Image (cartoon, rainbow, N blue to C red; front, top):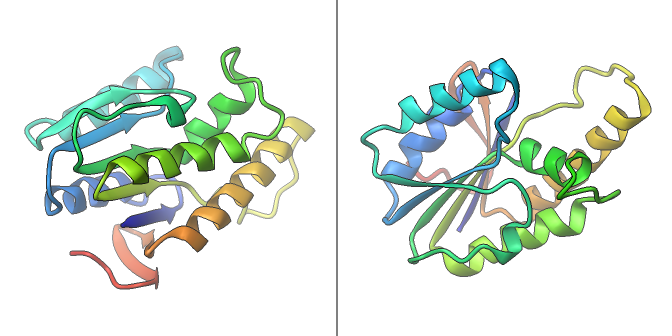
Length: 174
């Protein structure tokens, strides 16, 4: 089962995703796609580590190439998050793909083949209607295509608004 959680920054997606995964069968894997760089990202990574403490997750730090990842057991995966994975595939030296669409989708499909449940967290980054530099716009377009493809594949799509889950597709798993 594929569950896609989306919403704006700081809307409660991560907390909800972790609570949801706690109700799904183990083993539980947390795939951390945020590459540690700079003070802000290090603080955010540490915050997420503290949030996961005692919840039974095995953390796997994976920044690119999810398709080649082999999980040690069939269970529940929380992928946090598609935005970081997409950026890594587009802009980092071990990514550097002009269009990360196939690599990201293939990676999520590989997780689905190895798991009972995959919960994917992503952000809504294009609803502000602003124009950015060409590199940022390429990223926003790529992420939009990836999010749309994942939503189409997903059994459940849920938008988080102020910490409240608002189902958009399928039945919620509580």
